Length: 198
Image 1 (tube, one colour):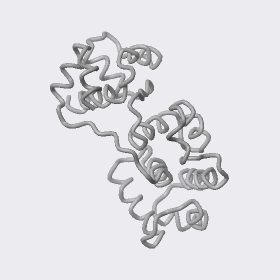
Image 2: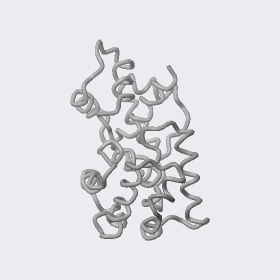
Image 3: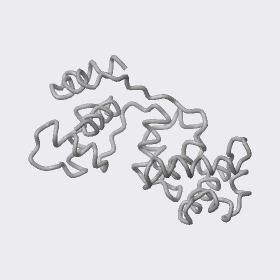
């Protein structure tokens, strides 16, 4: 991490952010990617509190065992609905399980795969778009050079911290972020923190 922050400090604005938001930045590598993606889908587009309640109820359907693609496929729509999982998300969860079962998604190979290849594999799953795949790479695979140009918080952060008149469009934000390669994940965290602490 120190290497990443030292690199970012070459940029005056990033230097200030590194010195302001001193809370440690950790990118851990998760061991259960099926569970990570289940959680990602359930947490999409609803408040954290509501998502946590639904996810806890969802886990109870597995009787204190870890969810697996096989176990999830045995759950009925009614059982998933009873946990509060919406109709659309039920479809996404079944799709995720199918992709794990049929080998479309091969998490055991992720260590050797490029970021782009993993994203291309994940977006084949219903309910997982590019942004979700990028967050998964950053927070569950510990990839250090991820930047999500469609993320509103990142674009707001760039506008505010670099005193731009307008919020950059996604393509402009992506070009702007090239200066932080190969540590764009760290730059992203600092920008999010700056927006969160406005």
